[in-house]
Length: 339
Length: 258
Image 1 (cartoon, chains in turn green, red):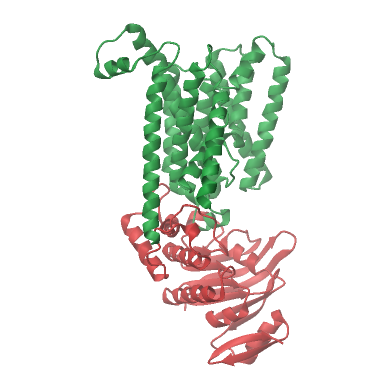
Image 2 (cartoon, rainbow over the protein chains, first blue to last red; image 1 turned 180 degrees about the vertical axis):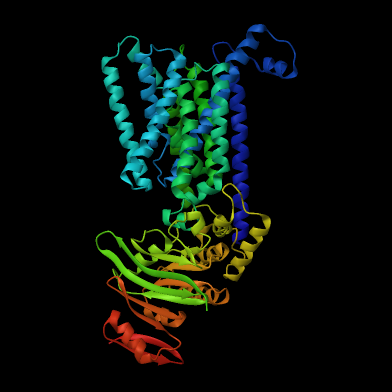
């Protein structure tokens, strides 16, 4: 009987993966079409078939729209995957990419570039990337110094470094020119896909994909890290080493994403929970599923960001407004299933 | 007889209180050895030191002549397997996947188990009494079945030394007997060196070959049950448990407080 139940659960999981793949595909196509310069389904069909289309549409499609939608897809995937992996290896349901300081470090890096390096868009991205990596390096250094290599120390050290970055950002904001610099810092910390272009995508995409592939290759080790620390050590997992490797590559993914988009709230925290609630389990398949959930929410959020108002809205507003109802719905759904 | 596990005059401290000093004993292949002692006697500290989870300050621990302290976790897991009191929560992991975790020390970092290894894991599950359970959710089977699955995982890990930290403590009477007798049989058949901490001396008398009695961080008694007289056993156990009597019933010995 149990075997039967399990094959039913496997089937349920397959259906969930198929449904989310279809939803992502549909929202991907919609996302290509909508925006200030609309592209029609007909244009896309012509492009696919190699027919010639209006030069303007072609330019918008290749230089702006396609890179942008690919970036939303990958950003949602990367943040969802990173959040889910963190929740697994830190055994903490509140873990998200920010818990090890990467987001606030990137925010600090961006703020420094905006104020000291004159708000050039590429410098801001580079500085944010370095800030994110340095924050995580500071966290691991702090854990090393305290010589207490437990998951709780990582979480605590992450909070310390995040708070420190936040207060330095406050200092910078205090001295910033309110008209230009302060506005730029605030805008950066709300995130946007508006500045994504094909050239930027070509720089960050290989690094993000590398990080994602390494995380997927380490899936067996990630599942082992989810055990109590003593138990995984006794199964031969070199806990400290593996944790640093997984942490480094997920950080690379998150730092690359936010350096281009600015901070994106909530996805890294909420996508793993939605994934877990839908699949009703927590293993590596859930991590991948959560990454897809992240992609879906991000594409939908970006569609709305471009269409709701005459100017583009910051993405974080929409990821939060979209994520919360999803989460509430699935929390209720789960309750019913239990009864 | 070969001495598989050799603990050579070790001293370990763990916090201020749990200090063990000058512990010295060996366990041979096929010997199932119980560590008995009250709470705070140091038996868990000793077991954790053998596991390599605590560093010894003095002395050395060797398995089949190889010193453990310079090894990393991966190398150590080839020599030692471990059954904890209670395994971690593993929601949505199948019983088979839990057993396959035992292969980690035999796989390269990014390697995944082969079909042949999966079949071997299923056979070990059958032998542990969990036939047909391989695709069940680990979190949804009973406590006794979980410990049997963890036991199958330790068998798949196939290390010469098996360490167990009160693996029976969360189980009911029937399951305790099942788990302990399966562990005993495996230790005997596969000539493992088995070292187990136990709270309940009667289970040690029923299943183990040898009792190591711990008090205040040292070993105060070492009894090989086959050769020991009832009087010797009684005297040894009373060092730990106070005034006890040893009864014999159908060839089985058990102690009661008096």
